[in-house]
Image 1 (tube, one colour):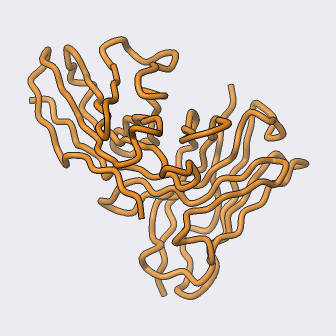
Image 2 (cartoon, one colour; image 1 turned 180 degrees about the horizontal axis):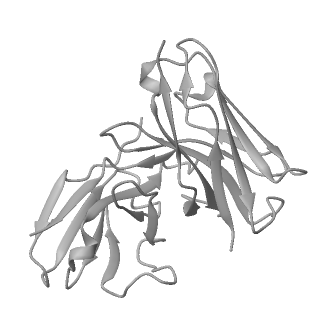
Length: 108
Length: 123
């Protein structure tokens, strides 16, 4: 079955930039989406259609996609950005939706 | 604003059927724009999409779960439901209901989530 691969963890100092990658063979043909999840809370969409930011999401969150890798970038990381980030997309046919395993972002 | 709230038994016996309902408030479930979705998250594991349903009845499922999953919409109650049969301990998870933005082609996304409900499978 189709899979998306993320690094398990990323550590970053406040004010620095965190980059989280998501790899999948169908990403050249499918959009990538990113969700932020804090402990005990439901996920929140932070990036849609590779690089679009929903209303209310701070401008320090950005997304890009090239080839088989999508990337979520958090510029000027703040303590409140410490959370699990999961990518999501679908297989080549668009009917099997998949999530990556999640990346824990730790703000040092 | 639109809100989703999942509800159902917190404990299910092995081999029995898990039944959950999601109530949509602040907006109508009968909209062409959205599908209505179940997603789960097992302890220490990632998110897993289970199924999507449109109020007109179109549905699609995760392939590995399809044989055990039934989903339905009740427009009169503004609710949608999940039934997962023959459960095992591996089905223990937080179950979320969510809203899926319809897209004519390609991967859709989930723009609104309920808080989730814990379901434990145990005798």
